[in-house]
Image 1 (tube, helix red, strand yellow):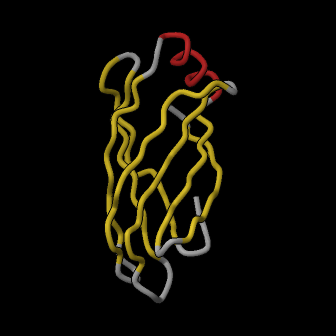
Image 2 (cartoon, one colour; image 1 turned 90 degrees about the vertical axis):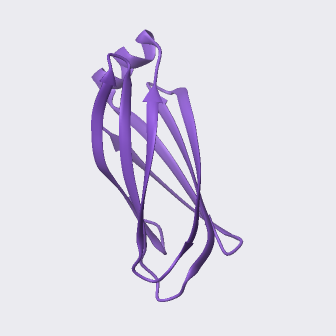
Length: 109
């Protein structure tokens, strides 16, 4: 997933239990300037129903710098079935230097 100044990619999705996954993602500053006070908000939905919001403060990212974040996605059995059948819909918001960038994508779980 890409915004004007950032790349966001999933590095690993590992089964933690039947209805949870340990997710590692990486955010890279693709601009020529330092990105200050970077924060990420990732809204995860399945079948149109909100599942979880992940909020992470990343800090400052130098040009070309990549930082990994890890979180556990835990869902109910109903959400788990929807995620396995349809994947996750992701709404990504990245804030840096007082500006907001957004993009959307999907994740197979």
